[in-house]
Image (cartoon, rainbow, N blue to C red; front, side):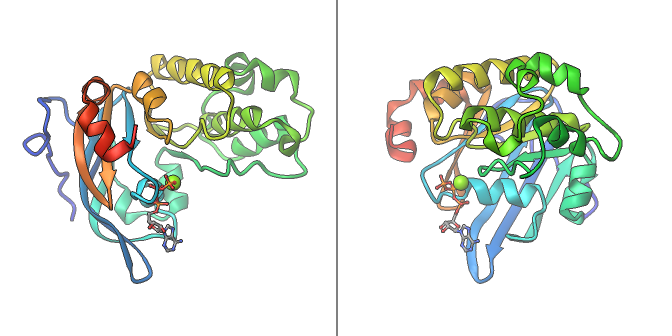
Amino acid sequence: MNVRPDFSKNANHAETAPAFLSVWDMHSYYGESYIVQGINFNVHEGEILALLGRNGAGKTTTLRSIARMDNPQVNHGEIWLDHQPLHLMSSHEAAQAGLGLVPEDRCIIPGLTVEENLKLAQIAPPIGWSIERLYDLFPRLGERRNQEGVTLSGGEQQMLSIARALARDIKVLLLDEPYEGLAPVIVDEIEKTLRHVKEQGMTTILVEQNAVRALQLADRAVILDTGSIVFDGSAAEVLENAELRAEYLAI
Ligand SMILES: Nc1ncnc2c1ncn2[C@@H]1O[C@H](COP(=O)(O)OP(=O)(O)OP(=O)(O)O)[C@@H](O)[C@H]1O
Ligand SMILES: [Mg+2]
């Protein structure tokens, strides 16, 4: 259990650099329900990986497994982040090790202003982006720094949720459907910031139902279907392959 796996021989695409985040033969369960059924994939430092698939394919379960949430249980497999064995950690330890999960429900803390939400994320070192730098990234948050977080619009709450993850010193950003329910113009704004965050060297896993938008931003894509990986390759390849899109993404 303590040898870092080498997936380079298993990958469908040519790659030589060692992976930054590796998921190896991961099996996840909710009680008796067997959901993620032995998946392997790599994420390289500084890239955006789109994790796609139909409703119920297991995308959220995969993110929660990597983040070491109590549910689901990962009964088998290894997860390595920058040489650290996440599979041996609790969710708190995984967060300390550099994992930043932005869940679908955004989890803004009620009763706190925008700024207090950000400060709370920085309560324990090591801290990541400074609050001023986060306001440069999301000027709308700066303008609303004294507004209660839960009263923000959906798009602004999504920005706050991403900003809270970056406020900690994270190595990888896990985003669960950041575009959900947002107008295209707000999606444009969030996409622009995700590009900027990538230019600063961040590694990101992006789960999205809006597959076309996700693929336009991502470097690579992994497609899940009923808990198994059915595609691992470049994002451009998925955009070009209508058959693959129709079969697994219904687009
Ligand atoms: N807490 C839970 N207990 C039992 N089963 C669950 C639980 N959460 C999810 N599941 C089941 O696990 C499967 C995968 O769910 P998951 O949420 O990972 O899918 P998803 O790909 O994120 O789907 P969506 O696109 O709808 O968000 C589904 O069949 C779902 O019903
Ligand atoms: Mg989901």
